[in-house]
Length: 245
Ligand SMILES: Nc1ncnc2c1ncn2[C@@H]1O[C@H](COP(=O)(O)OP(=O)(O)O)[C@@H](O)[C@H]1O
Ligand SMILES: [Mg+2]
Image (cartoon, rainbow, N blue to C red):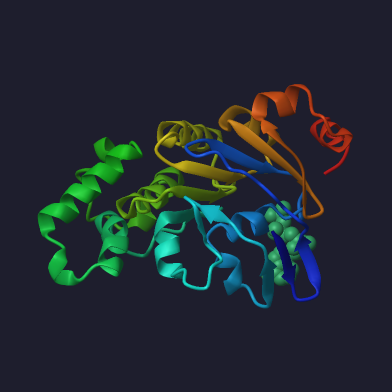
């Protein structure tokens, strides 16, 4: 994959095989293209001005850059979570059923099904016990950690294959960070998770595989354990030792 913002080439011949059902982290110094690469997986880069791409990305055997791909369908199967929790200005319940309402005829949605979707999504992210009695509460009044979990929960009724997370803990404290990392482990296996993080310790704790990027290129992609214990590229080693970035 190559990607340009106007004349500036932000990704250079990036080739990556992301393992299904695993957590893969993208690391590297600020500006190396982590967010850009992440956004290629749901083609949300195309919202940000004059972006041009070359190449393809296969998700479950289908090139998502084919002309016949529906961006709406793509973004159902490839969900995204952002740095700051961004729940909709609606109740907890409405946040979770929002995707279903968007993608289905009103008449096709029975209340019982919506209720079930809310319960199972909140259960999956570990919020059901805390929030089952507060479904009408405005999502903005929740703690930040709960808001971020809710932002993950609201993707689940659409049955995503891939969940993209761009520094999902950067607005959270240590406790919140730990909680989101635990949640990632619970979701692993059922979903393929790609996470951008500038936090090396987080990449090491919370991912199975790790991709080190520099100046728009993938320098090294290996199991997290191997990458941290015996990096093969000297640039990876220098970065991990904190010599730059
Ligand atoms: N919308 C944009 N328009 C122009 N340049 C951009 C845009 N977004 C990012 N860039 C540039 O692309 C490079 C990679 O940025 P980014 O993917 O955000 O890096 P990272 O997430 O690793 O910090 C940077 O040089 C950045 O300035
Ligand atoms: Mg970024």
